[in-house]
Length: 167
Image (cartoon, rainbow, N blue to C red; front, side):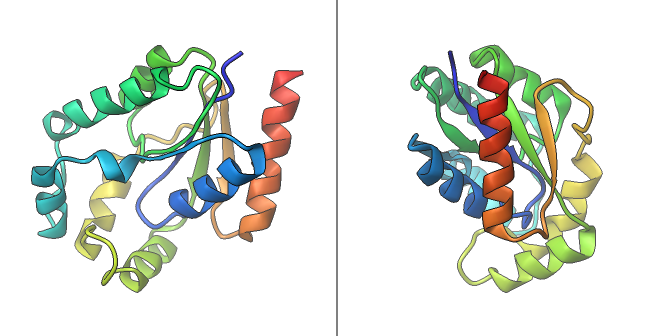
């Protein structure tokens, strides 16, 4: 059975931190979705220009390929802001689950600002992330989490949820 999960949410919610911790805990590979953005998309985001669906199209194709390359399971970080994006990923990996890191606009802004020197994502794009987000709460295979909880607590919650889902 596929044991794959996407850690999702807006910029600054903690996808990379939770993804890395969960991959270590579960002993499965981590795919950092940001690593697969095109140079053009990275440039747009660093200039504060929000990506369009067309900009995300090739990126989502690549992420789907990555999911299919790990049939035994993988932890992937991906904003997956729209339901159509999540459905596309689900099509690539049946039984794919999502951990949604829910965060306030203010907390996300503070976190994105704190990492501004190390990350290509412009702080001015936080508002566009919230405008694009279609809350996945209530969709099948989605666990909603408070992104401000301690990392170990979040990791334990997701690992427990995944284990229960498999039994």
